[in-house]
Structure formats: structure tokens, C-alpha cells
Image (tube, rainbow, N blue to C red):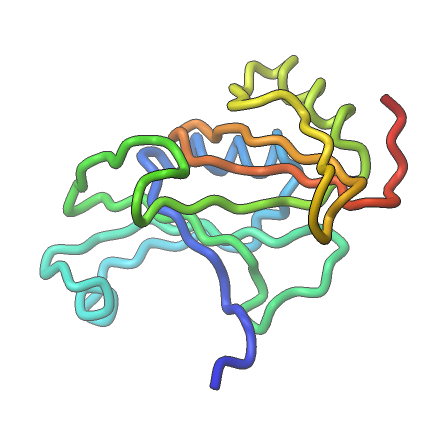
Length: 157
């Protein structure tokens, strides 16, 4: 039986660029970086020549998961994989949704830093999050991310 989430992970093209985005633009806490170039990793990922660079992030002020981080980003130094098309309608596509207190303020700050958005902020008008706000945007690798302002949070737009 599953007892929790260890982390969510994405593969990226350039780990240093990814660190700058998630730490400096989104404000996540960089917990740890490491090189994984060992037999254990090669067995785990199923590539006999695997060599990875890894960064682990946490949400500042939030309780950490059992692993100490919630988001793991991996650059495969070897082997180099193919890019998958951006978008959320593709089978095996994924996204992460981050909670924010003022979505409009966050979106404006990200736009000022040339972050690309898939949509404008949308009012959630149905379902369990009715009264909140949401928006999709992209990281530097075109990974879809989401900001969510839950219902009842302050909105100073």
C-alpha cells in the first residue's frame, strides 16, 4: 500500500538553467545536487551507460516529504534522449501545480522575466476548487507547470 509521495521528477536539457528557473523565478529551495554515474543508477533507469546530473527542490516553509524534497530534475548526460512534444494532451505528459497566494502578482512577475504562458489566469467556476484561479505556463524545457490560487486566498488584482 502506498503511504506517500517521495518526489515528482522531470528530465531536462540543461540542469544549471533549470536550477536558475526553479530557484530564482519560482522561489523553490535547492536542497541538493549530485552526479549519479554508478551501477545502481544504471540498473535503476535501465540504461547501461547512464550518467545523470540531479537537482532536488523543496517548497520553502513547507514540511518536507520523507525524501526531504518534492521535485527532482534530471539531466541525462548519457544517454541523450529525444524531446517529447510540449503539451498536456499527449499520452505520458505530466505537469506540476504549485499553490500561490496571489496568482495575478506571481504571473506579472514571471511575465516580466520572460516566462511563457499557455493561458491567461482563469477563474475556476466549477468543481471542488470553485472560486480559485489557475494558469498554465512553461519552464525553459517547455514542461507545463500550473499555478493555483485556492478559493478563499487573498486576491489583490
